[in-house]
Length: 410
Image 1 (cartoon, one colour):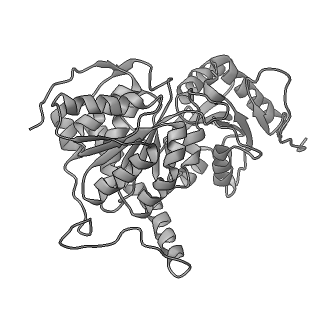
Image 2 (cartoon, rainbow, N blue to C red; image 1 turned 90 degrees about the horizontal axis):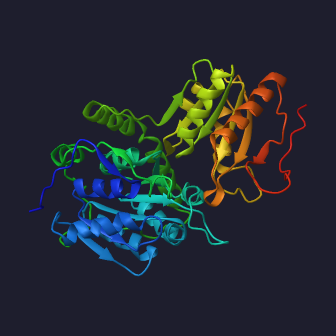
Image 3 (cartoon, one colour; image 1 turned 120 degrees about the vertical axis):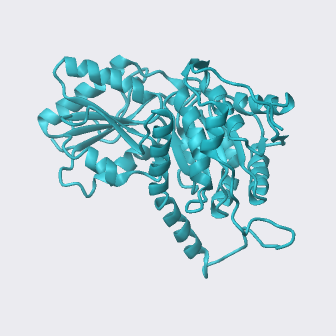
């Protein structure tokens, strides 16, 4: 039997510890991992819970992140509740196997502590790895702080294991800014968390020696297209399940989550759209801009996949100028996040102005003052009726200003 220990009403945890506590309380059967900065403490902590007898799970250390996800696939296909964690280069090595997990519809939970991709080598946080996984067929949630890393990890099990979903799920948190920053966290008790997550109910066609089946069989042009279309539809159809589980968690904890969250958008003329910890900074900046007479708001994407196109379009309906903040180098294109927002607005009658801000690469800080400057530029766009600067900007960049994609709408 697992050894119980109670947590207090309020704890001081960093994001990694919060995620590892969620794995403990969810009674995970197997964690297969290869550690990498800055996600190492998640699996390290879980291994200590196993070693100290707090839980009955299995912790398996392998030789690479590719092997870690491969091990997770085997354990999940056998009917176990399975999770792991990774970052950056490890995530990149894992990508090949991510497609196997989603194509086989296995409800694996992956905590991704976001970190820049080399070269040059960098261990600090940006969203390059998050974007690398956006087409891998996984549901993707974004946490903005340690509390949310904990909450979303618990909810992810419910979403992924739901028989109407059966898809692997990632929970993203910003490397070091969330993962290593101690914050107040209000966890559920062991009993309440266990009851909320419940016991995994494997589907009937999981691996069973008495009923042998094949997973991941080869298909060419005859059926591959159909498999991918059904998988895509399953991600889109996960929306009502996600919403229902978010609502249930609100009733349980008092903490409300939505796939898209907005702040002061009822009358906003300008807004910043963001992911991760930047959302909280942008809210402070927007409040200060409103004190200066600018109708500023913030939109936060909680669920990056499936992307909330319709909800985003509704939230931005009356906004005049929008800043989309991408924390990843776009490599000769507009930012990936920008493209999602722009796609959402293509069928909008209002068609607000949309500017792409690349920021925070390799852990570069973005301050309240930086965000206030972005709001001021958006206000200038709204007043002029066109984008008054380059349509894409690398904000807070050292050295002379670099010019990227321009607009001649003036």
